[in-house]
Each structure stands twice: as C-alpha cells, then as structure tokens.
Length: 262
Image (cartoon, rainbow, N blue to C red; front, side):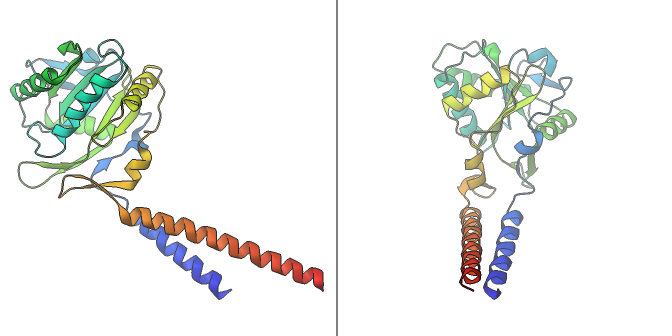
C-alpha cells in the first residue's frame, strides 16, 4: 500500500511539472482560436499605399502570415519556406488560394512592405501573379485586433525587435480560422490539405501538433528547440501510470487466488 501511495505522489508531481511547462506569453493559441473568425472589416495598408479592408482582399482561402519586415530572426525563414512550399504544393495560387502577409509592427511602412513583396515574389519558380500575394502594414489598433483574434502572442524585446513564434494561419473566405501550420517549415502535402480543407470550411488541428508539443520556442535563440524536459516528463508520467496499473492488476489477481485457495 505504501508503494502505491508513493507512485501516486510521483504521478501528481510529474503531472504538475508538465502543466507548469506550458508557455504562457509567447506562442500561437491554435487550440483556442481554431474555428473562430477574423473580423473582415479590419483595415490595413497594402504595399502600394492603399487602405483596404480584409473583406475587400479575401476572396478565396487565404494563407495568412504575421511577421515584421526588419525581423532578424524567424520571419525571413518563415517567408522563404512559404515561398518554397508555394512552388512545391499541388494547389494553384490565385485559383485555389491566395497569400496575405501583414506586419505586426505599426512603425513599418508600405515602402518596406513593397520591398519585401518584390523579394519574395521574385524568388518563386512557378508562374505567379503578384496580385495573389498581398503584403500589408497597419496601425496599432487593427494589428492588436487581428493578432488577438488569431491567437498570435508576441512582445517587444525592449529595443527595436519582437519576441514571437511563427505560423501560417489558413482562413476561409468568411474569415473562419480553419487551420494552423505551426513553426517555420511546411510540408507541401500539409499545405495542400490546409487549403483544400479551408475551401470546404473544415476546421482541423494542425498535422504538426505533435511536433509543436515536442518543440518550444526559444526567445533568446529565436528558434524552435526540442523540449527534452516536457517530452521526458510525459514519458515518465505515462510509464509510471502503466507501472501502477500493472501493480494494481497483479495485486487483484493475487487477492483473487488467495480467496480461491481459502
């Protein structure tokens, strides 16, 4: 009985450790926001200096990326890999989906957005109409609203930059959040399925959800790292649970045999 009590105490402590390890400040709240809606009346300024509401831009499933253009960390790899998956995925940009990139730094200008648009459009290998990838900037109010609505959490590093995670957010034409592709690298098949499901209004959890659990964003290194503590804690928790179950079952079998012998 003492052994059983000891195991239960260990399980409780490990479980508490796993919950405490969940990031609270920086990340993508994909579990909370999936299936909810972005306000299509939010207004941003495109790379040509034109103010537009989202409802005037979004006419098909839309792959949204939230970045800031002078980012020294993950924003460039995110958009580089987005361009790569646009080339490789077997869905047609402009026909099956469109792309929307919005800066969450209100200090950035349409001129900077135009420079970034030119760089990434020119990096594409497949034929691509530049009208189907819109780069935008916005004021602090609209930025705060859209980042909150999609569950994009970030904060200033106290200088010129921001600490944030990376993801693609796939929206339906009605603004419904249908899919998240977490991190900065994307599989063509995952991208294709996200677009197809979004066109049908299907809200599905990210295929990379397991990877998101195993990896955590490192604000200092500005990259995703394998979270050994969380994974090891989970394995210990599951192993201890199985061990406890085996002990209980064996204990019951011995009790039943003793009763039969009597």
